[in-house]
Image 1 (tube, rainbow, N blue to C red):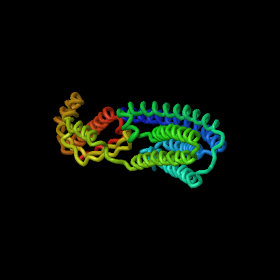
Image 2 (image 1 turned 180 degrees about the vertical axis):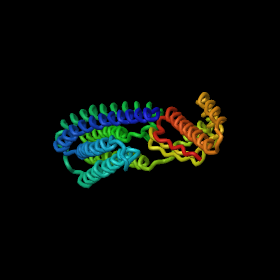
Image 3 (image 1 turned 135 degrees about the vertical axis):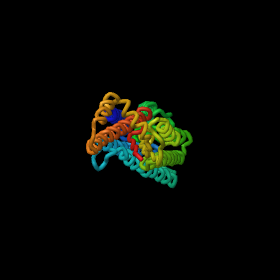
Image 4 (image 1 turned 60 degrees about the horizontal axis):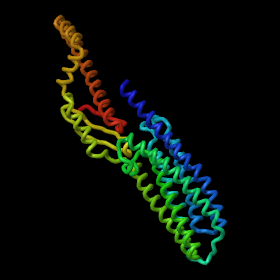
Length: 356
């Protein structure tokens, strides 16, 4: 019952985190839909390659955030017989697809458009008023969603007991990290576009505008490469940090009921989810002693009953009963050890202690 209560609490916390991520992604999606429309209009009015790249950037963000939302919805499903550990990995899978989309749609097309502009650098920029207005609005909206995503990540990092930097690299929630990275790139892109537009107008050199588009494309490609690498790492489970795994082993070995711990294996999915498996050689004498101590009055009555037994059959039945009770005591001890590990290491979601 204690173990079930612990698992229910873990599922509730995981669902709460995902619902927080849904809010982050939803807010970013609404913001980018509005910004895409404004940037596209400003690009059409001004003929700016940088503004066109920014419009593509917002479009890529909208499409990618749709994929992230789909991944969150898929991962909220309850485990079933075919997927006993749930659907956590689906968040990484769809986040990976989203990262690839940023690379090709955002970075690739921006680079292509900027290079095309360099090839025909004699184009004339039109009215810049709408571009400045849209860039200002972008800075406000993107900055707001970036701040909201950062707060969610900081809260998740505190819950996981890691720094924000570690959570950005290995955290178990790729969606909020992806939105934060996209918004950081968006704010940087606004600064690049604004600078290039200003220099283009001041120096009357449209090549600067095209170079801005290329710079934005390189920025998006770099962010996409980071997200792709991070999400691939999330899909391929790795060993728990050696120090944390060793702490669990030492805690098991320090328990009087454990003689040795062998064949230890662990996997980690980010910083908030891990599985631990080990083969345990139990101290049979200590197990028997605990059975006697916990049921001393009952055991004394069993001893009194044993003294009255006269046939081999009666003694055999008595021995079977005691053996079954000792095995039940061993099962209780295994549950105690597992609950002890989960309580001290909440990131360990599944424990498998095999009896040697």
